[in-house]
Structures are given as structure tokens and as C-alpha cells.
Length: 166
Image 1 (cartoon, rainbow, N blue to C red):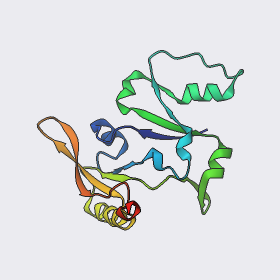
Image 2: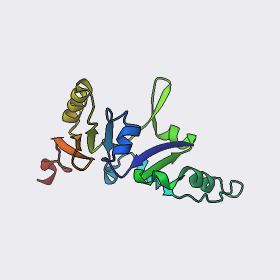
Image 3: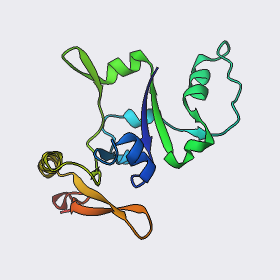
């Protein structure tokens, strides 16, 4: 089974620390309604609990995998996580092959959030990509009074192109 993880939030301090190399990485935002790849059809919410359900593999392998792969300790509930689950057959059918490696095809991001400590060279490269592909771009910053993150708009593209409305 292959798993791809997503979150409903882009401003969680712990997630930027854990998953974005101490705020030097990026966060991609997707519009689930604009999913041309249909990859989000296999998106399931993670259940946070400290009680492990009994999963019966012999009766129903799919239910067992979902039970196992979609359950986490309540300690991780701040992640507000959703996961896409693939078996090899589905993954290989929907993946993009480059050389000997396979990559999950995702729709174009609706926005990219830069970590507050991203280096200037990576910031410039991502800015150029966002400008060329009309992807909104934000920079995360820390509110020192409230010890939380907020975003600063760098590039903003509307959800619909103005010409589409004419």
C-alpha cells in the first residue's frame, strides 16, 4: 500500500517544524473541486483515537488496510490529516514515470506557502514557477506576540481567470 498525506491547515507551527525542515520548506495547497487527475477520489480522513480498533484482515483486506492506515494517536490530532491510499496497481496506473522512478500525478496547486526560513535562492525559483504557472504564493511569518504563524501574500491569482467570466 502507498500512502500520501495531506492536512487541512497550512499554519501549524509544529507541522512546519516536523515536515518542512524547520520552516525552510514549502506547503502546497490544492483545490479539491479542481481535481483534473481524480487523485483526491481516494482521500480519507484520519481518525484520531487512543483506542485501537480490532481489524480483521481475514474477512476484509481493504477494511483492514483502511483501519490500520487511517488511525493515529490522538496526540497527532493537531495535524488534521487526510490520506490517499493506493495499492500498487492503482498507483502505477495513475503515476508519472520518469526514468526508473514513479511519481504521483497531482493537480496544479492553487497556492504555495513558503516556510519562514526558506533560503533566498529557493524562494526565487518558486516565485518564478508560481508566476509562470499562475499559482498564488504566500510567505509564512511568525507573530511574536501570539506565537503563531500567519501568511503574507506575495502573488495572488483569482480562482477563475477574468477572461473565463466574459
